[in-house]
Image (cartoon, rainbow, N blue to C red; front, side, top):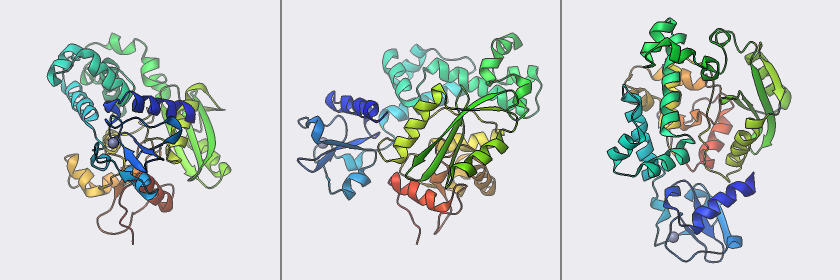
Length: 353
Ligand SMILES: [Zn+2]
């Protein structure tokens, strides 16, 4: 896992690929200087290069910021990520799914550049994002009690036959099973040791459905069995390896925060909060009240805190990036000490005395 990722990062360094800007940084052992990918300075040797996803780590290790590429000023939400986010909003707000040409024209780029940016930032094409978004709306409408017909139109599918085409694949299970705590559903899981304790990751084929941190393997397994009382739990699994590997590397400080797909049951409001949390840049923290305000619900601070406290996928939905006003870090479902460590790992200033 590690070598693969480092290879990708090294490739970005050697090709001076600026689209990785803000995603990671590299330090050069021989000069003691650190840079962002794309720096015009001469390339270091592979064996003298170290990677980090926050300038803080490198500064702590005694590296100085490069004067040419000024990595300490790198905005974590770099240009291409911002572009992808803005196009996601366009897709979400359109009645008809925009074509990639239309999207590209909006930001003055070529369709292939837009496709590449999407794949890099989200792992999917704009078309797949649009489909996923509509299915999300469909699920939410169903969950909130709409009937299938209503939910269909609400989600912009146009006709119910479109929904039933492979409804199984879209929902990750049949609509009825969806209301039954995973009955008849296969969930793969794995438990790994990390710097933050044991990490349990469980997933369907569609995405991560549970991520927990804890002191013992047994306690985590117990929780998982309660959560998916009706599902078939299996140790190991194909998708799981890659997702778990990325989380382990992230917790070890070797990879940036990975934006993994998740597949969980939630209310519309929870999902809205969680999606917002996934857009808080790594290395920063937002206040509960700010999140509520940005969601257009300034009175809903406590509901936001509740949505954080009930997040079933630690790390994947980074609820550790939300803190209260004033001092302290408030609670964290997996222990406030872990919240502190996660914020430090990401290079956020922690106001905790
Ligand atoms: Zn540089």
